[in-house]
Image 1 (cartoon, one colour):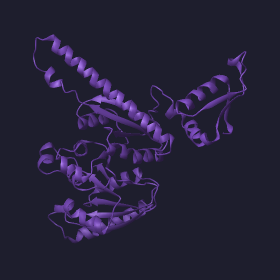
Image 2: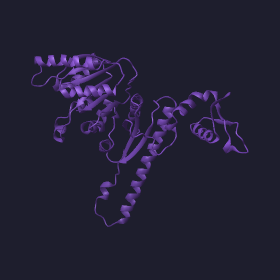
Image 3: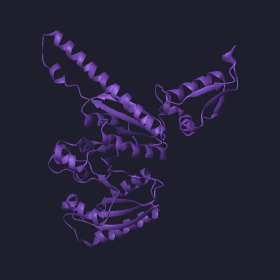
Image 4: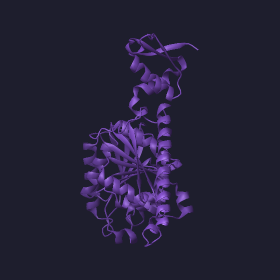
Length: 369
């Protein structure tokens, strides 16, 4: 197999590059090394097999991703938070998260939370010190396992970047203790992200398991935009024919949400359908049609990269009607201005975003307003 020179460095830099490439499985040969005084060698050639060149170039161009560092983050850069649990659906969310991060020159932070099953036991009063020691040892093992799983997952992500399956974006990892939805919200409050991207189970799996959705809980409480990606659903943001359904009841807050959507999907050409949810008390009021026309005019003027049209559905059963809506008018992403509710209202009258994530297998961007 023919050898080619991929770089010419001083000895120290050549050794560093050699170690990096060999760590990623590429065989490396150094030439022109002064064997008597290797540390002062100059013009050391780093040579690899010709068929390894594309892989080596990807690694060299994005060395910061493959070189372990305490913190590769630039704190002035946008951060996209991606909660993971190492499941297939959390892996699926990585593709669009990394693609958006590259488009925004942002960085990715992977978050995993673990639950200590002994917390409740430790809260009980006990004179048995041996029990507390045993619980502490068990908790330490759980935390060590969490960090080990996250390190393994990070290696999988680097491998996907290396082979071109993910966009080359700098990322780091965080492991913290807590119930997943609470850990995500707590971390986001302390470290405000530009966007949260989460994978979700498919509709069938949600119905089978009949348990609370972490994503739905985050949507209800989070103060940041959340993009949810259902299991097995792929979204190509580089496509030129993305179809977006934007739900609106023609309030001023919806215009702010439209602006946020345009910034998140910047430089993306898309067809946006404004799905009008008429007010319950005045569903056929003439002013609704006038307001919708005014919104259309505003959108066409301020968001020229999007093509707009409109439709209306019954606000009382929007989630139920959505199946028929997307059958006749397919959508790649739905966008919902997500209004905050108190705990009592969330319990007895959950918001549209909460309903949609439980009843639709379509990526959804929920924007808090």
